[in-house]
Image (cartoon, rainbow, N blue to C red; front, side, top):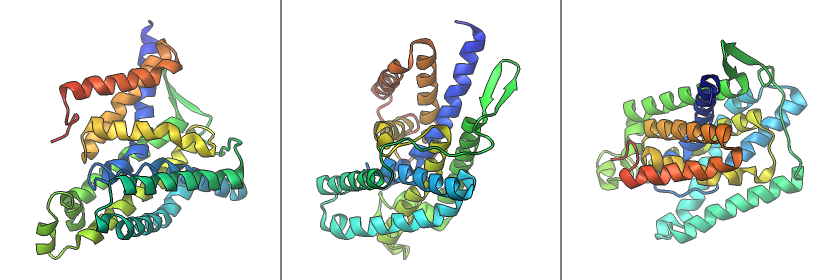
Length: 289
């Protein structure tokens, strides 16, 4: 083991963790705060990837800019999905197994629709920062990983400030704990949950753009992230955005070190083993209450 290789593996893990932050933050809101097990979350990420691909390939627009422009659209899509979920399942108290089936159906429908339209070929985008690498001595910083990492951390900071400094943000944090108290404050719990779920889906526009910047995508690639996003959410502590960052970084570093020194095939097994070991000593997660 050389120090150069070890340091670069750590840096690569941090950058990978930054990408995992963007992929997981929506689940941290939907599952960690609202207790909605949205297993279709990766499908929305892939949808964001394909929208970035379409606009980039036809008009040459930067994929990150496409994602930013699509944030209101994905927010509206998330609000619509929650309305259907609430009226069909949550209002009737059927938000456990039936609700899970609803999101599984969304995952399946989205994947099949993308396959019918685009086929199973891998798609990619073009941007000036996808190829270049910044070098500081022996440390390599690929821009295609660095830019998603930086924007993801800025996203977390913005969301944390919103949740902690605004009335709606504090209501989102409280909605799963005491809905009656929210009503006494003239806040409609259903509206608050709709806003929170819409925000969770809006984040997938950015995550989808980051994914197709980092690697080519095809419709079923989102399945690889279902386990990861829930694992990071639980590892960091349910409902904790700072915990999500820590969990994502730790998982990224463990995967990077394992892939570098033992091979990529071992990375998922070792990462989830690390998750189980952590939860054995800290069942509530790293920053869980």
